[in-house]
Structures are given as C-alpha cells and as structure tokens.
Amino acid sequence: ITQLWGQSIRCLLCPHNCVIPEGGFGLCRVRTNVGNNLSLPYSGLLSGTSIDPIEKKPLYHYHPGKSIFSVGFYGCNFSCPFCQNFRISQQVIDGLEKVSPHQLVDQAVSRNSFAVAYTYSEPLVHYEYVIDSSKLASEKGLKNVLVTNGYINKKPASILLDSIDAVNVDLKSFRDDFYKDELDGTLRPVLDFIKMASEKAHLEVTTLVIPEKNDSDSEIRRIAGFLAEINPAIPLHLSCYYPTYKYDAKATPVASVLHLAEIAREMLQYVYPGNVGAEAAHTRCPDCGHLVVERRGYLSRVVGLDKGRCGNCGISIPIMGS
Image (cartoon, rainbow, N blue to C red; front, side):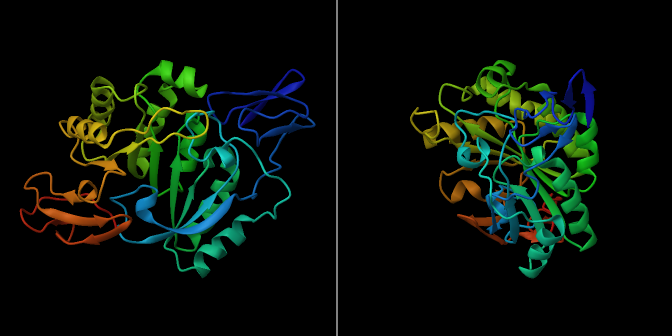
C-alpha cells in the first residue's frame, strides 16, 4: 500500500494518499518513511483495553447484551475539531509497552470475550496490526468488530473487511464541504466504504448531531435516504454532541435529536437517538411496534424475539446473535 514518489513514498492506505519524505509522517501521525520504506513505529502501541458492553460501540443489532474486549490506538487520519477522543486521536504517547497481535488475542480469550473491537481512536491507520489481529482472532473462534470513520481506499478496505464481522461507521455529515472544512477529508470515500461494509459484514452507522453544523432536516433526510437505498434495516444512531476539544457550541438539545430521529424513520426501520433516555433506545418491530429488545443505558434484554422473528407478528428482525 505504498509507492515510491521521487525521494519520498506515497502511502495508499487512505484517500489522503500522503507523500511522506524521509523521516516524515503522514497526516495520521503513525505512518512514517524510513529509508524510503513505510515504517510503523507505533504498531501495537495501545491507548487502552477494556471490556465494554457491545451497545457502547454502538452496535444494537449485534449480539445484544454481550460484553466485548475493546482495544484502542493512537492517531487518526481526520482532524475533527469536535473529537471526543482527541487526547488519543491527535497525538501519540510513546514509550508504552507494545502488545503483539498474538498477545492481544490471548487477552481477549483470557477475558472470555466473544469478540475483539478495534475502537476508541481510528483503527484504520493501524491497518496492518488490525489485519493480523483479526485473522488470529478468527482462528481462535472470535468475532471482529471495527468502529471507524470509514476513510480508507477501496483495495485495502476490501482486504480488511474479509476478516471483519461487524462495523460501525461514523458518518459525520452528508456534505462534502463539511468533510473538507471541518475534517480535512472528503465524503465520497466514506460512502463507498459504507456500501462495501454492508456487503461483507453487519453494519450500523452513527452520526454525531452538532447544532448548526449537520443538524438540518434535509441533511438527516439525505443520510437516511442513502442508507435506505442500501438497506432500510441498517440501524442509524443519532448521537447528541457535547462541547469538547476545539468546539464550544452548546450541547445538542434532546428534542432536536428526537425530531431528527422521526425524520430518519420515514425511510429507515431502526433509528436510535443517543444519550436521550432509555425509552428511545429500545428496539421495536417496524411492522407491529412490539417490543423486541429492551435497553436501559448499556444493558440490553431480548424480550420479544422468537428464532429471529418478532414474537408478535412473526416478521424477520435482523438482530445477530440474539
């Protein structure tokens, strides 16, 4: 995923296609050029590991109620001024002990997790590590979950998704100018990744709703319409923003997110407002309204499913591992 570029190398992992001079780094801060070869000095340098509820990813239609071994990294190929994990995404803390893919998978097994989640900061910029770890995890009978911004070129994305079982993509806006002005990126590659992920893995999508940035009715309609064209059963999470990092705008009103969720439900069967109270997090049958999965915070309880179907009207409910 690199090519020579004069006295530099070009990294072909993500759409930035960074041209990296000797000793320099790409925009992600973790991929560098040593002797005109790609070097990964922070591979295996983890910002943290934890056992999390699967709902925290957020994944609501994938093994509800289970806990998952989660691993975080440093660096990111975006520069979001509202990043909620900016302390690990926008810098690298060197000198920590590295964890090999074998050690990582052994930790997941020893903690009785059914899967490994690559999350917290952007896992895609540690592509090689995630590839190696996910293959080893699969060999051990574990599932692999990717929580990502989806900013990756098509060829490496296709290879990675072959060993990934579930994905949550952070779709930050449906406007290219937002991606360019706020994140130093572009929209189209993320949309392409979402389509690709929908064909290879269980997919859910999250949009952080930011007042006066991406909270218009029309923008949420475009997001919902795009997902509905792929599959109207794709779960969409609309989360409340709160001020952090470089953004000091007031937090998103709960009423705004609830309103936008109703708009999205005109096209999508499963829309979940985030941080707005327990009732909004429940899963109900899109046909009859029967309660299927009850959620209280990050705690989930399957209450209305019968062999993958609504216990009341019998239609298929796409919840894996329930």
